[in-house]
Image (tube, rainbow, N blue to C red; front, side, top):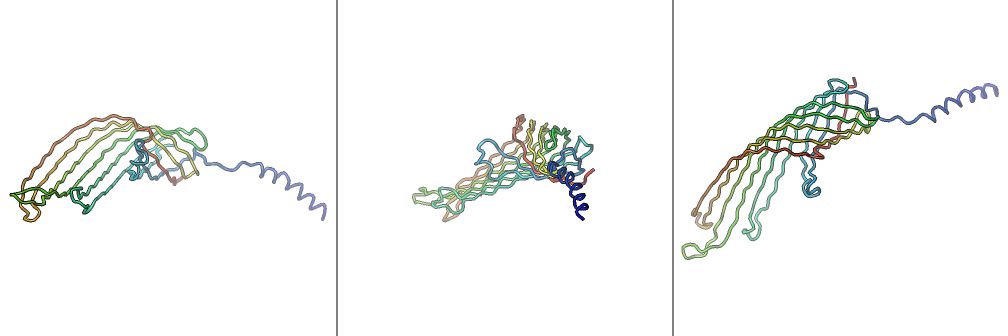
Length: 244
């Protein structure tokens, strides 16, 4: 019995020693998955804490075509609503403002593993975007009208719509938390053409009688070409599945 136990201990010792010396497994960035689905956010560096309270959020799907090349399909949306209702006094303006934005793009990226956790990539996106800005205001002021003191109300409305097309070369790096999960950051060079329309209207009237005193409107169109570098254009977290 003692001989058998000694034999078992002698056999187990090198096995346990080898297990103890085996390093913990780390994510393997070279592992290839067919599908990558992620959530994206686009921070603004200027006024970091003020301007990032409502980030444009999006989804980005990547379809791995080869071990080093992937198709990119993405969409981004943002919505913001602000209002000040019945301020006292009404000369401070009762207003409602709505900002809406939609963006869709497609592209290709080429990838190169740097280590077991990190992958560098470069590519280009082509896409289109639409933004809308709407402002409605109402204010009241006391004025002399026909020899009497009257409350004059003013309604104002302004709307801007912008249609854009863009080409966006990019570079990025991703860091694997697990084989199937990574964080990434991208830097882009944005080349964008935009077409905007603006329209505004106003009317002034006597509050008690609803008599219209004056009305007016205006509109203009604008075209713009912009080229800019965005050091941190997009942050994302991606889930990978469908291992090849």
